Length: 450
Image (cartoon, rainbow, N blue to C red; front, side, top):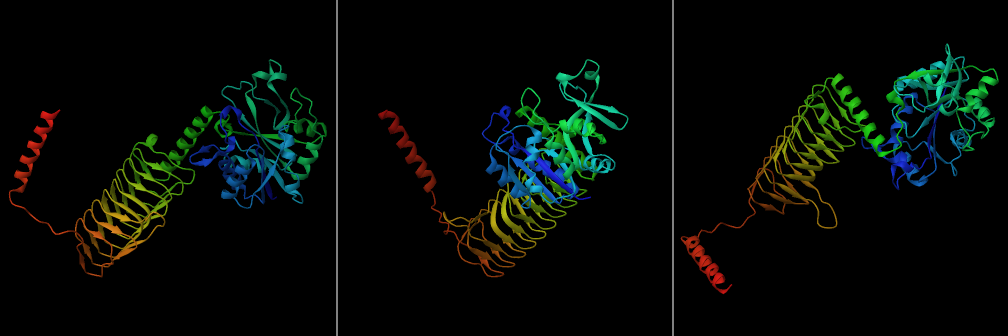
């Protein structure tokens, strides 16, 4: 049976105290909505429909970046969850499979849980996702009889006995497309808010003699985000899970709680991550690398055997080949560093290609920006760039070449050549002492005047 996702993302999120739509607030450098889409993608859905309202254009743009094939539809007025799902009806026209309803502010439902919901659809018209709550509070309760979900009762309507039930409703549901919208058509706004509640389809289905069941998941999977405090908690949940996953995959995290990961970070086994390393979006680190303390990586690829840091910054477009060395206080941006090459100290290499087995001396800068455009620097194989060299792009330094320390290179350097581009040193015997004497006299006169 094919599957479609309907992700509800229309809420303003007043408690976030933000001009930004709630579902675009980020966890691990991706909007929480993207996390929900990523969770649903485990089902390989035939269609994905996001129901947006507040900040529609911004939500549509965010969805397009992650999944250009997804459809974003407008819920102009927020009249309840059933009303929101109904907004996806046209986008699902002609679809005959199962529809699973997720929430853009509930980003952590696992793939394993979703697959269990799909399996539970056999013989049931509706499948509801529930969880055993440590503190049920004011959650709606799922009242079960064996494997059958008899009804969902809201806290306000529950008897004292029903309030002792700890199996609670997450809001996530699964039903066939035809069944779902047929049940939604029967929902009435018979509540204090005069809204159309998706949870009402359970009672309607039962009244029609249809089977309804519930699947249970860990409570952390149903974590909803309605405030900045919830967002911070969600970030902590994500980071803890992601770190545990890396440890299980054979990555060494010397001080796990200090390492920050992004939603798409990929790190190979036998890599060592020292404390206080930050992984921004788009980072892949191959097996056997070593990322040293206080380094910041974003949008880059680090090949096996490479050592990065401490205090290094790898910016988007950085490609490190095998066995490279990027040392302390080095910044690399949009550059390829060839196998076995070293950029060890206090250098900036941007918009550049560095060949194999080359050494970039301390304080080297590729001067890539002329105030209007960026320009490229090419450094060859087995090339030695002397300390404090300024490479004024566009420029190239050939294989087996060398630049003298303190040089400003503005012309291409041929293979095997030594380039010196600095003024000749002139020594004036005894002049230092005379100069200091003159300066002391001048300082004394200034003191007398003042």
